[in-house]
Image (cartoon, rainbow, N blue to C red; front, side, top):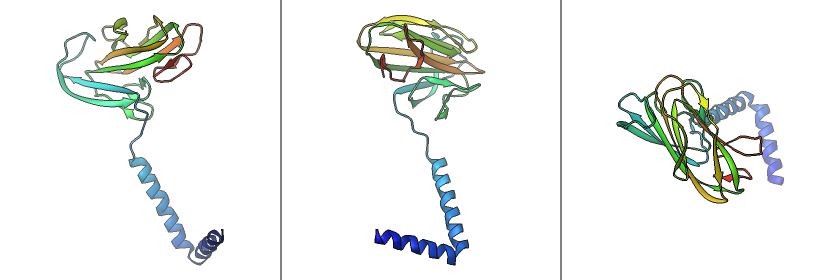
Length: 198
């Protein structure tokens, strides 16, 4: 405690005796902190691995044969990727390519309460959704951002899903929500609840 009082006294004395130098030092510390903050990449929990594939040719169907030019992997925490003309994550910013790309994401999840569930995929453009290896729903071609309610019965325990998405051009959006029948609340896939765990 004695040392703390001495440090505080020294800081006060220095501020009174050399206010310009102390002010300049404080300003430099603020700018340095801001530069470190801005240059540090955003971090999110690595829940879903998005495999993103730039196609050599334009895409008109989620099921068309792929002709991959390049690829990359991006990890996200939820499947809520939508913001105007680009596929964007709230913290990571723009992901994907400018146009003509596919995204594949697959993951295991745990059902805590058996029953009827609705998966609600949203896409601009096409998508296909599988649960436990069976196609649940799809939209094959181009469209403005729209959602579908896809019903599935799930038993308690381990399950898996796979979502394929394509962006042709123009606006983009890829989302996936879920809802337990009888519960009005929709949650993004990636948000744990009393019903599902990712």
